[in-house]
Length: 541
Image (cartoon, rainbow, N blue to C red; front, side):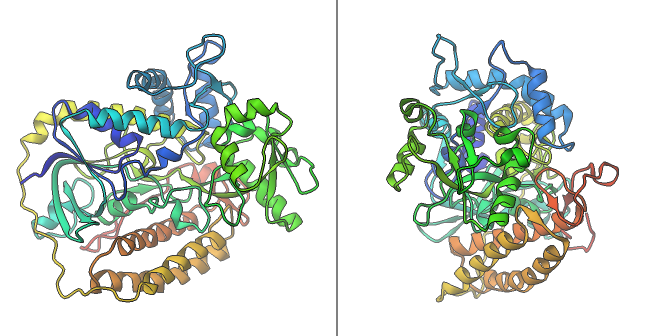
């Protein structure tokens, strides 16, 4: 019955790390909807945060994470991740990741980023994610028990209840794998597995402007929600404060590390402004900096602000930020001599599929790792460079869970899953049906559910999304599946869930800033916003 033991959907640092740790006892199949290196990991510039210096301490890293999370972090998880972090970073070194070493022979050259009280960001210049992805993919290629299928897009999870002809059960229902669209053949494959792991990254493409790669359409979160899993805290969308502003360049991130190395945000007249919005100035957390830039742009009517690091030595800038320097130079900006035009852009989802401290979701044998998951580490706002840390720590813990539970999992009864049925679906002849709805959703989310929100706008966007979602649902069943149609269905669901979560949180906390409720309300809202699908039997879970 099983086409593999473990099905991993996605090929970023979380999925690759997990695969390497379980391949000694399981057959692992990784499916990724484009090339295996097309991941958010590959674009991560800053680095991975961990206590790697005698001048730093776990207590300080914990305090910085809790402060950034604005009262919503799970303290047990924060302690767990921070304390396990150094071992996981050194494990990456053993796997072949080449972090930059310190000038005095230190093991790591540690960077400073916003929200941190010490230098603790291990990096490979401004290509850290690409370097980690390279090393892990090389190890995966050398591992016989791991199969990587590129151009395979997961559509829906296979659930035991549905396979048995029953309504979805929600909590405790067993996941049996996924239906997967082979992008080259156009066929839908039934990929059964004993354990399924969602590592599909975030959902930045729900917004008009994002630093995310094109793959970030919230696939894992949407699939888990449709299957009856709990998702949480989707109102907390992190907008990176500094995306390169250029009408031709595709959304290119200017790393937070630029401000960590002395970069200053200035207005069109060359005047610094962040001190007016936060006492930490340019090294404030991302939510504060994004709101400060947003307020400055609205006040002045400017299309962008500027990030200036030209006061640092030119050779230092070129060596520390070779990718940023090269990309900006390609578009006519020499960052050693002039400031960089920047705007905020959707960057990171702090919520996701709710998991326990082992990465297990509310559905049996379904795990979620990386940005797809809501672990409790980030709370209402992610501390810079804690994302790669979370991914490798939870991959390690999930592998430990699988090793302990594998004998029992292999004894579970097999269930035959029906093949995908196309019925009378026909080929879609006018792609404008997809592109128009895609554009509508992204513009609505950018204009109505952005950095600063209002209750009236959230009510309006809910109403405007409803007919779009109804139309997309009809398209999904009327036409043969294409990758664009699958992704459109997913971003529509994620948009609806972000709006639902945002409307339910009547306060301002972290990344969720409501003009109508400008204060934090710990009495009523110091809790996760958890949502589940209304299942076939009408019961609200």
